[in-house]
Image (cartoon, rainbow, N blue to C red; front, side, top):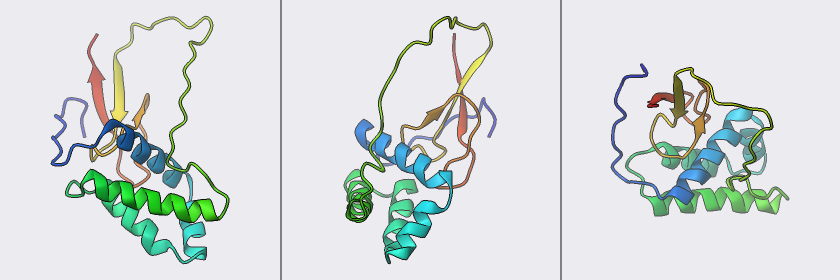
Length: 138
């Protein structure tokens, strides 16, 4: 998708906190196959598939997505893995970093279901498609 392409509106707006959870789920799932392998080992691969489907579906409402992510979290918590979809928040300015004059873009969720934003091109961990580039006006 080109940087100038408009981003389509979504049918079911996602609350910010849930969008952050979906973004974290995307990052974790997209890292490698460990999450899928783990869920398969414990017989919860259908639960993971359902969470993936709901997290990327424009027809799924926030309550459905929340329940699906909570169910994945519950299975993982039973294995001692906590906070898979809980975003980590920290911001500190880097010493000596100054603003650039270069054109800026942000790459965001291609299905507009999460709060994931990257500073360079990347792929969605849930759909496998590229994140959508959005130019940032100066």
